[in-house]
Image (tube, rainbow, N blue to C red; front, side, top):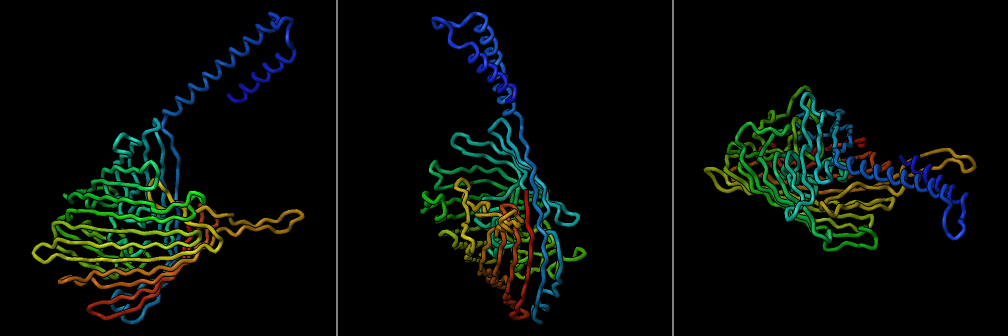
Length: 457
């Protein structure tokens, strides 16, 4: 179509140049007729092109995406650690192996499909939803299976978080569940809001075969400081989230691992036994281990979750912190309180900064100043690009002890080195030192080392 339009336009230009200005300012009849016919044809083609664009806009679009994360994990333990959590095995695994698709229809509908095949014989559904965009008063309305709006670390895509795994605070963050949510942002894009109702505990494929109860979850964020001159190289993020949840089959369970994930061999789930649909484990999907802190099943009618969040970005330096807590209305017993917090710092040795999505209130994909490459050129020798390099450290703690519940106290100190070869390929190196306070077996020390290659498209 474009080539045909260019050919006809050239023909018109040639005719105008050949005929020249006629006497008295009037074109000769033969040239004028030919020129009029060509212009009419050109107009017809332009109209046809416009109609095709409008028709194409109505058709659903489709963009295929995927992600692969391959991990190598090593452990070191003292004697008390082995007695408390078992002999942890080194190994390699696919942490994530995902395929997905997204698209729009009629410019106002958006849809997402996704499946993760990393868990052996247990594929899980990711974001599978339909969304209506830019509705009056309601903003955007999403229905389906996706993350509830809770915690900056949780709703930020894993590839855009600093460390291999989310912190211990993630123990209290609801995972993907079936639900209906409305969300949006202010016109200035300095604040966001989200509120929705979800099933309390749908499984990895979005099913809820039992009356798991309903949850109300909401989150709000604001940017008290946003440097427009640098396009957001300097900013301050504040946010908070809340969730009221009916207990699934009148029981609640919180548990988690140090900030490293490894599937147990041959379907073994570690000393706490295999997970059941009634486990409220959030940060530990499926057979990931080792489990260090665990409340066990708590009889309860409902519970509430709170999560304030903070992030300060000053060029290549970033500081981020979250605190999360749970209030459990224990049946036949006293109310329970559990909590956790984390603080992390990072610095880009190559000068980049952590980008921010002002419409969603989350961190977005890093763009290195230069991609990694090494090529031999004529006359200039070997030319290289470094990619982006980041160093980071995180301190986090979770306490699952209160009154009659002794779920242990875990403190993690994590350091990391990240190499971003480009916007879609990353190497991550993490070292975790985990301090476990076990009420029965004493205090123990566990070291975990992780290496990950991570790429998506």
